[in-house]
Amino acid sequence: MAPLKIRVEYYFDPESRNWGFRVPALRVVGGGCETREEAERHSLDAIRYALSDEADAGSGEEIEAEYVELKPVLARSA
Image (cartoon, rainbow, N blue to C red; front, side):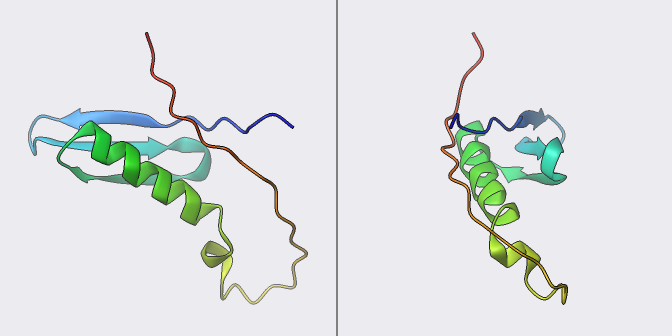
């Protein structure tokens, strides 16, 4: 099975002088990072959380769940 690719957008806010990120497919937004590398680490943490059982905890719905393996790899544009 091929790894899942999820688009992550990084941006620099010149007014606050911080880096932020967006993960559109998961509706995740984060920011306040001093460096792009920090934003990359935070985005991976946010993706892990969004795809974890913790994100669905307390929904009260009867669900059937299974796990799929994802291997996140940071790819840089040329």
